[in-house]
Length: 304
Image (cartoon, rainbow, N blue to C red; front, side, top):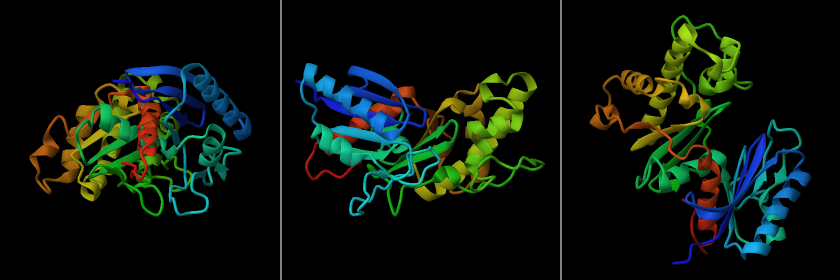
């Protein structure tokens, strides 16, 4: 059977990844474009896809997985735009309109973390589950929730990286979130670790590394308790550079159980497969774009 041919864009603050393919095992072209000014950057995106169409044939659709915040309400006049963002020059940039008009294909659009959640659900650590959460812990913290097979949207997209978390006893670190100070992202992101210890997590070792991992597990578990109670996920998948810290996952699992304090007492919360590492790595975001493209190619389909 001939595989569908989709385009995917993962728009990040540093780089934009573009690819053509159908799934993680069938990627036929890929490029990395530095994230510069919007007009020039999108021009390079268009050039990549126009070249791939000329040499390999048409695309069924393109999916865009972007840094945010985004306007995702289809009824809104600025649907498809990046809203006010710290990335210089990218506030109020229309992402969907120019891609659709220039390349002439249906366009799927969502946050990078939501797209990664879709990819982990189709091909990765949450395969075949209907309700799960994907959390990325890197420079910041982002969370995508899939509920009964559909990405969770509302007035905006959820911002669970900014959940309030209780301060660990004796911790006087102010927090590193410019909006909230000591929210989950402010206490547990990679940027927070670097601000707390004076260097990035990957450069820590010895007693500092052990202390950082223990503190990270405590704050992540506090955030996950809120998510468990609000979403009731079948599984929590964690990716991102901070998730690679040695020994983190057993500590997060144990700390989350402590934070739940026996309520509601589900045995699944104690299972090794409840909080697990992501499996797609750096492919999660761009292959999530392939899922968004797949949904966009189906007339009347609701993104899930």
